[in-house]
Length: 449
Picture 1 (cartoon, rainbow, N blue to C red):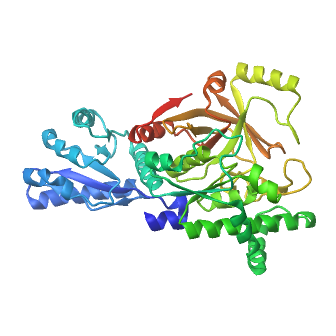
Picture 2 (cartoon, one colour; picture 1 turned 180 degrees about the horizontal axis):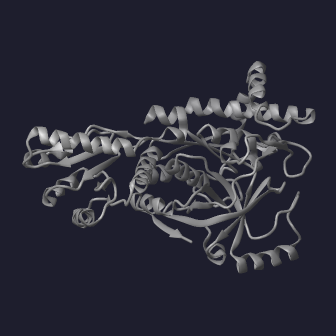
Picture 3 (cartoon, rainbow, N blue to C red; picture 1 turned 60 degrees about the vertical axis):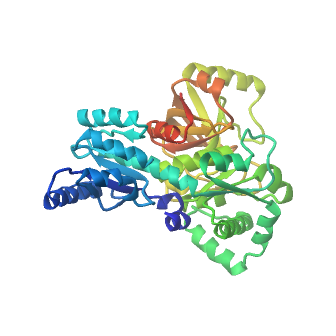
């Protein structure tokens, strides 16, 4: 997993599955034939993961030493439920999550009985109904392992003044296994200044194919973003990191006005989780969502009022009326400036300025509408996942911030009452069931609204 994560980010995450078959009393040929059929069935289902050779237990002595027969890199055990349940108790010594496998992945009564038996022995066991649910569970398990092997870079001063987040890096590592390192903005800027001009031109040529148009007055701004992007990639490689967040508003902008939005979007397209405003908790939330889905996620502000072209926000009277309407209709707005092409509905960006200031560059591409989404924020103490389920009603280029998505939610009032912070991460699809499993395995609470 190490090489795959460092080279491909969240796109490279794979689950190592170990099939286990109890065939007590069977002759070797019969047991091997059953094991081969079992493995082939799993290989056909878990095409994006690694299915290891089955462990076939043919006698009670081998069952007693089962913990010594499992490879150290196994993420998930897949238990063929055919067998004497009393001997399954030996699986409790392995401390690896288990899913049952029955009727080509459609677990039912026998699996439930096995689940009840093994839960009594302290086993984390799940009984998926259907191959799709099984593969999604495998993604959750591998995401937890990937998180424990990951490193997040925080570029710029911490804490920034407007983010409710966790700043104790030791606590983050003790809780999640995630390593976090803080790097000064001056180091990033020095690296960006040292990028060879030919490398900037080469990258500019590559990027130009993914923009509708690059006007002459935006060319220099885009080249500055490219330097920042290449410096970020250099730091990620040097530090062996696969995620970053940057203190853009208070630190980077105080030294140089280079909105990093396009650089962050490019990194997300490449499989690197990339957030802004040095919000560690939303970066972790993005990592959780991207690692589980193995796809891109974005971050944004949740607002209950309309967009405004900027600078600034709508008048206070307008905001108050909008908030009342939002609570009545259960519609919230997620808005920000980082949109990866891999989440867009077009294959080219529209190049824009930053927040209607007439300077800097951001990029807009419409994201999907009419689709379910999951929003996530891990609380500052890392003890609870706050999850919002919704459906995107419409999207627009709203200038400040660059994109907005209007989301129909179950209870906007509950979000207003309990949201841990302004920033939340978002991915396409309903991943609330998987987040329940993630929370359970990481000893967290979960709140779903």
